[in-house]
Length: 218
Ligand SMILES: C[S@@+](CC[C@H](N)C(=O)[O-])C[C@H]1O[C@@H](n2cnc3c(N)ncnc32)[C@H](O)[C@@H]1O
Image (cartoon, rainbow, N blue to C red):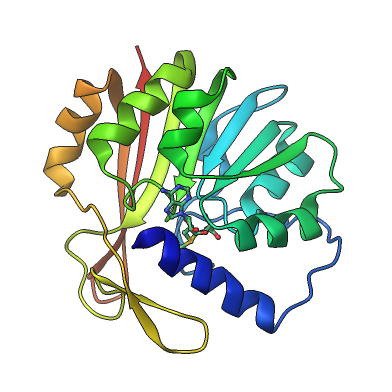
């Protein structure tokens, strides 16, 4: 169900854009609102680090990390169309690689080891955490970093739990995994990850919008 929805999402995007090689964005964001929340600094010093993004979409965040933070990066996305968009835009940057596939399948098959793994509204939250988190831990180096942002589980309003709104405005069913804020530390601990920071981003009316968590492997 999720793969079909994200494939269609990417197909619609490709219908009205023709990406060309582009410069990397000057910063990265963890929320849906470009003006708020932290940037790449929460990933720490990435000079020479090997980093993977799970659910990289069009690759904007990875491009920033390679161009401004000196990382070597791998982007994984379940939708082939997203990987095509990412390659067209940022495939020319040295130190960037993209691969199409499900995050858990990629992590369980790869022989690569990562200093950091992250997801911005990507595979974390769109994949069962009891499968994804241990697979992440297995590919992280000791004291490696996991960072992710997800829609806040207590949010109100537009971002629906079981529906993906597509670029053309129609909708498809989707499955999300949205543990309560208080459940994340034990979920992560069961996978061998210790929470380092937990950051809740709210709007001006104090409604929670985004949950950002960083954790380290033991
Ligand atoms: C809301 S988009 C976010 C894209 C990107 N992280 C960004 O911030 O622009 C979610 C992305 O996750 C991808 N995705 C969903 N489930 C996935 C999975 N199980 N494995 C890998 N990618 C997945 C989708 O195809 C989509 O590109």
